[in-house]
Length: 180
Image 1 (cartoon, rainbow, N blue to C red):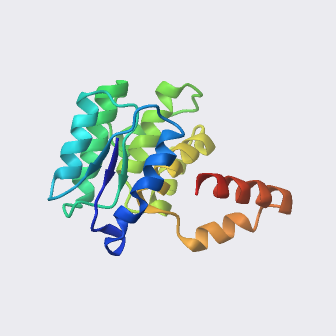
Image 2: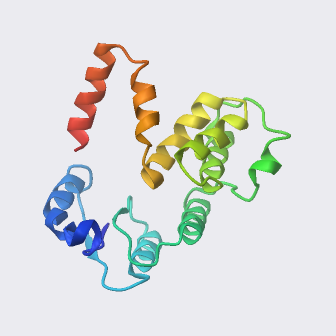
């Protein structure tokens, strides 16, 4: 399901409808486009996708009811229901007993909680690393979610790129062209 708010992006979101639909079809056989018309439409569409067990939900633009706490609550409920991960513990509850563990059952939920308790991209990464254990994996998972939610500040991108040699930068440029 692709959910589009027609008023986002300076009311240019619908200009991208066909491109979004075609890109989604590169990955999914059946693609349904939903256009929001009022507050709560995006939430209702996402809940419908959860009930109907869609493989993916892509959301472009808000529906006027952007409430980060509510969005994170919906994400948390969906993940608990769909994947059975225990997301009931807070970071403060995880810290004392968390140790290195390479299994997804003991890494992914903690990474998700690190995102859910964050306020921005940097905070999400700091939350993940603060857990210790397999911190590079935790930060990679948390960072992927945080990038989708918050974007990555330019200063962090610039600093990360400064560590890459030219061949790796070219790999990144090719990837960015592919996903654009």
